[in-house]
Image (spheres, rainbow, N blue to C red):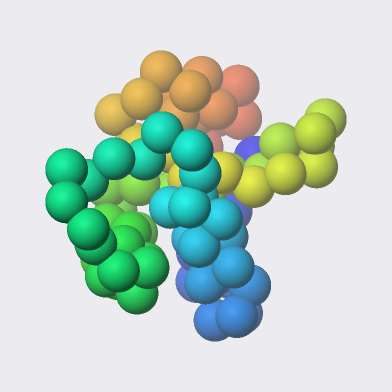
Length: 82
């Protein structure tokens, strides 16, 4: 399920983004502060390049690229972005 990032409180959205950017395997090639990573993802959300998704089976949130196969599968199964 796609969740509009604007429907989340600022604190909830920041928590989702912080969890996303702090996962193992996220490599920026140099030391980047947590705040800089959060701001980068926030810009991508505002630009519509990524979106927040909620998986009802695992009851977890994720952030995915709108160009990803996972996003396209979500759109095709729901019939809309909302």
